[in-house]
Amino acid sequence: MPDAVPTQYAGPEPLFEDQLRLLDGIPSNPGVYQMKDSSGKVIYVGKARNLKKRVASYFNRPDHADMKTTVLVRKIAAIDTIITSTENEALILESTLIKQYRPRYNVILKDDKRYPSLRMDTSKPYPNLTVVRKVVRDGALYFGPYTSPPAVYQTLKIINKTFKLRKCRDQVFRTRTRPCLNYQMGLCLGPCCLAVDPERYAEMVREVILFLKGRTPDLIRKLKQEMNAAAAERQYELAAEIRDKLIAMETTLEKQVVAISDFMDRDVIGFARSAADAVITVLQVRAGLLVGSRNFYVSETLAADEELSGACIQQFYEQNNDIPEEILTPVLPDGLEAIQQFLESLKPDGKVAVAMPQRGPKARLVEMAMQNAKNELERRSKERIGDASLLERLQQKLHLSRLPLRIECFDNSNISGTRPVSAMVVFEHGKPQKSDYRRYRITTVQGPDDYASMAEVLKRRYGKGAESEPFPDLLMVDGGKGQLGIAVSVLSELNLTGRFDVIGIAKKNEEKGELQDKLYKPGRLNPLNLDREGGLLLLLQRIRDEAHRFAITYHRARRAAASVCSALDAITGIGPRRKQKLLKHFGSVRAIRTASIEELCQVPGINPKIAETIQNVLSIPLTEGH
Image 1 (cartoon, one colour):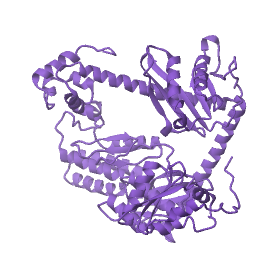
Image 2 (spheres, helix red, strand yellow):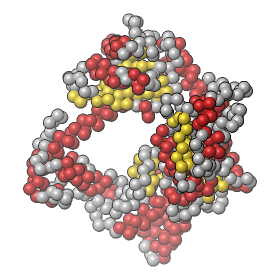
Image 3 (cartoon, one colour):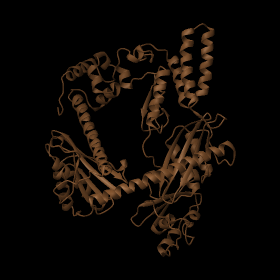
Image 4 (cartoon, helix red, strand yellow):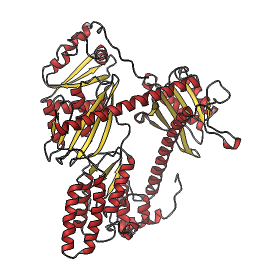
């Protein structure tokens, strides 16, 4: 159910003298203030041109326009201030502290998922495109993110069919000895093995960048000129090749929506708010064409619209290399001048204008962004209501003592007892909370003993007293009655019996004719029957499968790391530095194993004698654990 919204608030309780003393000694300089609760936890970070005036504004009113600000003021037990030279320095410091402490009442943009982007490292002689989920400031070009994963692969498919960039990964590119099938099909120039003109390849890269930046009209004009020039010089094969590119580009252009006719790059911000949360939408317009959008979710924010707008701009472009010439917003942000200086420091090649249009095409773009944000907020509200209903039914059907808003699930993974690991996944309100996922390396168990492994990891998770909080509302272990019994025993040993509910989930035994997975509760001999509640069982299975995936992934990573270490560490004369250089040069042990002595000698520090030793040792098959 949606959060109740109070229609009237009678006013806060009288401030204690200790709170009034918080104002003493606060300077009037620009800087950053940190509000802390009685436990010393930072609950809000803000910036101000005049710290004394800004902090006093929280206390010099009998009540506040919204309940959340009133709650914040009640919780303030201490205020720390940091003086800065300028408001711009305060802006940067505020951002750093928010990322460090993640205060509950600050604006923190949340994405439901990490969307894919396309990455191109133009510092390499023959760059290619790769799909990545994380954007870092490493000097490479990033395009996106694409809110629909199929969209990024469709874009990559168009580029691969139209342009002849290499498709292979870097480690394959370095070690390939003959051109691949893409070269045979005319989809790659084969720079891995053939002498490809760097300037010709660089020109192709520039065309791809134009396309990915939404400059399709500019690219089309350029290609038409090249096609006509090739035809005039009777280079008909080249002209036909460019013609095919033109057809592909024009087909793509027809699918793009014209947002505004001035061909300018801009982002358009809109937001919608409810009593509980807010949604911010960013529309991306490139060369006048609407090329994408992203939605961000903000919960429990105290921010006014001006602060919401400023926080959105600051946090979004800190992680985004593609900063446009203009940013349109429904409300000008607090500290506009400092924010514009901050943006220009990230975009040294030109100025960035932040504007609030009142009429005309730009104002209509802002209205479009606001409508998109409103639609997304309504969708989230309906989804939240559906999730709440599902959890309420789960509580009733399983006879749980509390609503399972936070569910934690554990799963073990090992092969014949080697390198055992465990993993915990967390679902809050029916959705994965990946920042709370945890991986555990089992350290006290010898051999394949799932019960002992489960006991160890549960003690490590819940045996730290207050440091173990937050506790779940529902603990789920992957396994039958045995694993459930271990969980109950551990919780009893830790004096946590009754603190939260516990269930076990076991896969169906098809040989015995079982039709569905089984759910077990403490003190109950037979599994629970969820025949008519398929949605509930599906939710629990999804959580269990996610725990299984997370554990398996970690176990495979451990095995792979051990395999790499054991293979190279077995070679006399190969220490950590040479091992690092070999892996950096070849990319994998497999590539090192297939390299010739001459190729090995190209690595700094590797002479013919050591290269021969490497070949001799790596030619012997290694089993896991050696």
